[in-house]
Each structure stands twice: as C-alpha cells, then as structure tokens.
Length: 85
Length: 384
Image (cartoon, rainbow over all chains, first blue to last red; front, side, top):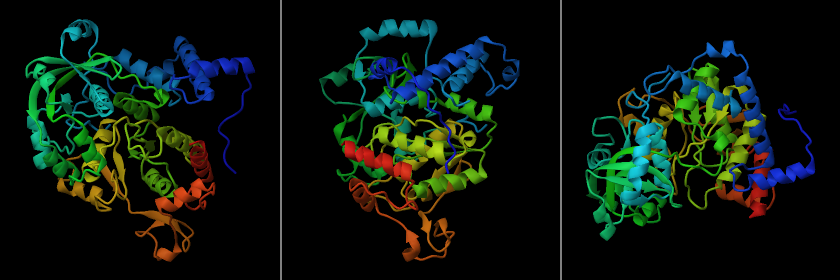
C-alpha cells in the first residue's frame, strides 16, 4: 500500500475552465500545478506578513558583498512558495 | 557547504544604474541571436552554475580545455563553453574590445558580451578532442557542423534572465539550491543526472546514494536534447510520480538542470559534476555510459576520466555505479559488484524491448519498472 500524499479538492467547473484558459502557454503543465502554485504563493505571503522570529535565526548561506540579507530572505521565501521548504 | 569550482559563486546579473546603461547601449550594438544551447549557457553563467566562467570562453581557455582538459588557470574543465558566429560579412562587425548584444530567437535582449577574443575554430579538431569522434552521425558533431566557425569569447553582463516556458516551479539557481540544502540541514547531498525516465535500476542507484548522504537531488537535464529522446514533459511526470510514491519526501528534492546535452560521454560527465558542485552538491552519481550516445564511448569511460585528475581537484565525491538489475537469486536490486548471480538470473531488458512492450500497451515487469512510470510512458506513446 502506497502512502497517500495528496488529497482531492473540488472547485466549481466554470472556475476550472477559466484556470485551463489561464495556464495555456504559461509554463504550468496542469490546472493542479497552477492552483498549487497560487495557493503556496498566497500562503507564503501571509506567512511573510506575520511574525516568524524562529525562522529568522536559521540563516543559510552567509550574506556577503554579492548577496545581502534581504536577498537571502527572498530566496527562502521563494523556496517556501514553491513547496521546497 | 562545498565551495564552488574556483572558490567563488559567479554572479553576472547586472542591476540598477549599470543595467539601465547597458539597456540604453544595446540597440546601438551589433547583435548575435543565440540558439537554445547558447541561451541556456548564458543563463547558467549568469547565476554561477558554471563558475568560475564569467562569460563565453576566450581562445586561451578554449585552447587549454582542448589540449589538457583544464582552464588556462589550471582548474579542471572538459567542454568548451563557446559562442559561435558565421564567418560571413556580418562577422566583421564583431570586434575584440567591443560589446555585442546577445538576443533570444524572439528578439529579447539577454546580455552584453564584452568581446575579448575572436578566432576561427577547427571543427574537426574540437570534435576529436572533446567528443572523441568526428563522425557526423554523432549528435554533438552534428551540432558543431550546424554552427558558424568563428568563436567570440569574453565576459557577460546579463541584463535579463532567460524566460522559460516550462517547469518554472522546478527551476532553482545555485544560490537557491545551496540555501535549500542549508535550511534542510543537509551537509552531504547526492545529485542524479538523467535525460531519461527513471526505471528500477536508476532508482536503485539513487537509493544506495541516499543511504550514505543526507539528501538526494534529482537534477534531470531539461535543456535541449535529441529529438528521439523521451520528451521532457513525459520525463517530468515520471520523476514526480516516482518521488511521490517511492522516496521519503523530506530527504529528496527535484529541480531542473537547464543545460543542453552535448552527448560528450566522459567529457560531459566531468562538466556535469563540476556544475553540480556549483549547485552545492557534494556527491555525484556516474553510472554506465553517462552522457553517452550510440557506441561512441566505452561503458565506463565516463568514470575513468575522473582518474586523470588528482584526488580533490574536481572537488566533488564521485559515486561510481555499474549496471544494475533485479536479481532473481537474491530477490532484490543488485549489480555484478554485489550479486553472484549469472546473466540468466537477472531481470534486464534492452531499450528496444522496453519500447516494444510500451508501444503494445504492455507493462514491463515490476522488477524492471514501477507501474506508475510504465503507465505514464504508455499513455505518452498512445498520445503520439
């Protein structure tokens, strides 16, 4: 038996059709990919606005003249938005 | 964290006032329209994926790579990263010491090349030294035959990143993979390069690697490949299905490796390893006939070439694997290194056998391919 890692979410069919139109030639391979991306982006934005002191302590690569602390935060946020973190 | 090749992660993306200046300058410059391989190279150089390269190679580096498989400064490097133009009247507008605007095929400005070197190359010489053949049936030789015979070298100032149409949610620059690994607490990371769907044999190699490292990055090459290779869309579905069902999510990552295939076998294996080091990878898997094509290279040439360098020179741990298979005697995946069984006790299928089965809608045995992967491939063949 395989471990189930995904769940089914139902959305209105007209909305689904709109999503299908939106993703044409967009680089997303399916409506599901697009919806997951949008949700992660929204949730990531919400997290960013809220306090997250614990996360700020865990820096990744050290900021230097080529790579500022702001850049680092942006990278971490992108990784979260894409579901890597 | 492993150091990039040459010690510093190159960043050739320009911003702010300098970018504005170059954007204003670009329309007045001679231009070169890049092909798919060159566009991918520019974007990889921009973010340090090909550190220490800061642009297309100059003649000094090019000659050194061909003669001794090293950059002029001595660092190991095996494949020329070059920009070709035709030797016609337009080539006269490209001059050493001047700038050239580099554009995509649909006219988008990507970068300014500060031309430091311009020379006429010998296609046969490059083919024999890098690809080990000048047979025009070899796709890498065919590519050389299709491009101009004058190279332009120099540093790049990248004003716009390349816009990809697909897999944007799987595209991570070296600074991003390095951050990812650090955030996950991975100190040792193995990367698996592939341009094919992953069957049980490849899965086995990655699982063996995963037993000795903290994390695995599946890093499939999604740049330009031969037209008869399995399409990227199909392969991506296979990778996603395999990782979702058969790997621990918290110890794996899937990201696109944007480089174009050179089909350079051993030479390309070294390039693949060096670039993965730049992405922060510490261990690189090299199996049978890595980056090979047809019968141009010996099965393990891509492993032997690393022996030409002193230990530590490449700077990434090489995990060398032999051909693996399902072993009926031991009841598990194995290779000739770990199983005493003879060929008759192995479940092995040739590429032709697998393609015939998939075309007929028949699932290969589960010892050879996971059913989810076989189904994706069957569906793709039906849709053709």
